[in-house]
Image (cartoon, rainbow, N blue to C red; front, side, top):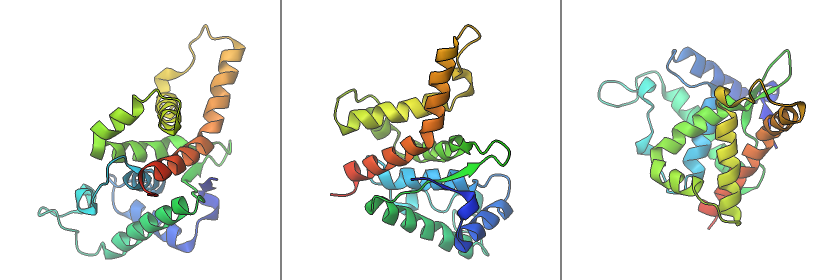
Length: 193
């Protein structure tokens, strides 16, 4: 299951607006969604005070800047919503969709997810190296594939045949659903019990 910006609730539209008003360093809504998802499904728990407030919302003392309380409330509400969706096996990542091509732009979501992964780099690195045939191995393979496909320099080269391009295009097109599925598997592995 995926969600795009065409069907956002009023709350999420307000969150998107406040993020846009927070400045150039602020995350896009899709990046924030990926980041919050990574925080929830991390192999090792991540306390809120390890990532909140974001640097771009903090004053020189590391405290939330005055006037940002609504943004804080909406971010924490989305965090709770993601957790509820994952627990109910109804997770819908917030992906942007290109207006012209109608292509799902999952790479920005993955960028936010990667930022969340950095909070527990060693644990994620261990997971990504898992080559077993169980759920962890499935997650590792899918996530590694997503990280590889998101890199523009990993396109098939000039000598690639039509079938190689077709495989690449198929993998890219499937990625939004795969990332949603992987998030659910990670939640089941690390949080359900």
